[in-house]
Image (cartoon, rainbow, N blue to C red; front, top):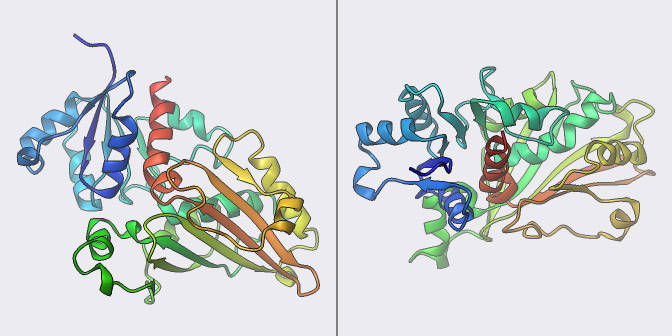
Length: 309
């Protein structure tokens, strides 16, 4: 009988599940279990699979993820949930290892880990260190704008851009105009904000990648919150991080545009602080792959932390 850990991917046919499966396919240090098409909606077979696993990776809609967790009767089964079902639950560890000191250790020892959303990954990465340092007030009236590749919308949206009607797909779409997107509560909680941020998401006619931006007004920040201080605070927070880098002053000055596809097919994320002192304007930016650090890459990073314990 194999002693290698068994990883069950529930929902391996979605965009995130397929990418996780691809990242794990050739690994020799674990076994991957998925269900054949005829059994994917069989509750008994799913329950058997999830309870046989050492770690279950849930790549499901929110309701199905909650259903899967309710199926667990084996107390040794550990879970990484890639849905948004448990991202603000106090009973789940938030799966952003670089977010705070001790977070990677908390993930490594957790039974239940909730993978961050793609957009919140960039927003929290930028805001939490600055809010904790007192450089961005917790009640600052934040406006967060982000543009993602169309794969962020799942299989239906991928089909829209890659299927038979692809020629008619819109080149750019801004959505969430009712300002009820599911991500702001996650951003607010884990960035340490006291007010819900205004979040405006968009997607373009490219498959994957994200540019997320947050504009700040110097006159609304504490006096010590200079552009240089904001950048230095982020650099100190992510010093030594394997997957998160902060552009230094020289890199920032030489950067004139941001390519959302820069980190595609990787788990990397770049953060930048740009601004114009004369205007009192500061722009916080994050670039990463919505299917990498924003989804499957983060899930595998969390998986590796959990397997190391």
